[in-house]
Amino acid sequence: MKRLAALLLALILAAPAWAAPPLTLDGDMEQGGLVIGRAAPGAKASLDGMVLDVSEAGIFAFGFDRDHDKNATLTVLYPDGTSVERKLAVAPRDWQIQRVEGVPSKYVTPPPEAMAAIARATKLKTEARATRAAGSFFTETFIWPATGPISGVFGSQRYYNGEPRRPHYGVDVAAPTGTPIRAPAGGTVTLADGDMYFEGGLVFLDHGQGVTSLTMHMSRVDVKAGDRVEQGDIIGAVGGTGRATGPHLHWGVYWRGAWLDPQLLVGPMEDAIAAAGGN
Ligand SMILES: [Zn+2]
Picture 1 (cartoon, rainbow, N blue to C red):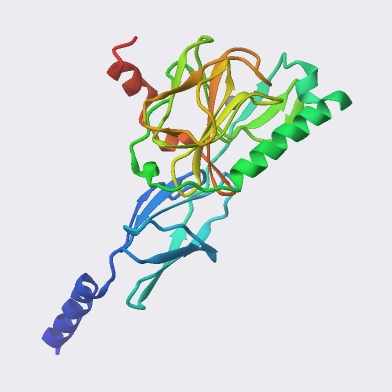
Picture 2 (tube, protein in one colour):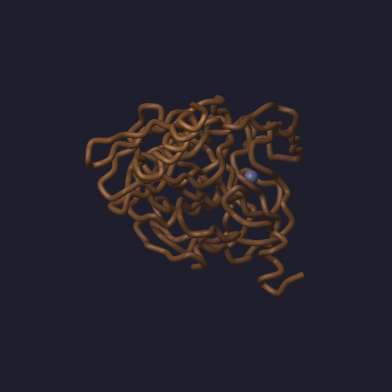
């Protein structure tokens, strides 16, 4: 009887090895994390009921917003009709508070005459965010668009001149004006504008399926909407344009409606500086 039970247990444990359809998930199951799924050609996938883009090879991306709750459900449907439902635990994180002083008041409480410029910028961003580019460049190992001291991290609750504003959805890298900004991964430029009210010089670069890097406060924008770029291509230069108190790169990443933490996608800054032969 004992041996039979052991045999049955062995059979049960062995079963998934040949019965389960292929599904691997790589990335960070936490707030601000990006996850890359690999299923099978022809597979379909959805996250909490939202249909995901899936490449021909069966690769898909999804992410968790800063304020995502603890649970998510991934469903994958295979061409042969089988399906897999995966319950995902999304780890919560603690967020810092960051106070930024010395911000020109027109960027904290914009005057009425700024409304047209803000509306123009909002329209450009809304249109760009409604698109999702082809490709799976998000599977590349991301590189830092510029290197330097990190002066702001993802998720901080921000106060400008003491006024509470929305959280900081990106990472800030202090660097001199004119420092080249490189594409952190390949992709398609979906927005390129030198004069956005809050962002200053701004580029959106879609790495596929809507996984998009944005770089802001740029002194120079070297690309235009529709351009295809490769990882490492120069897309512009660091500046202090828009709501900035000094020259720095702000690098943000979003996927559809969710803001992601760029630092989860890229290796340590020290490694990048060492690799470049810098100090
Ligand atoms: Zn920033």
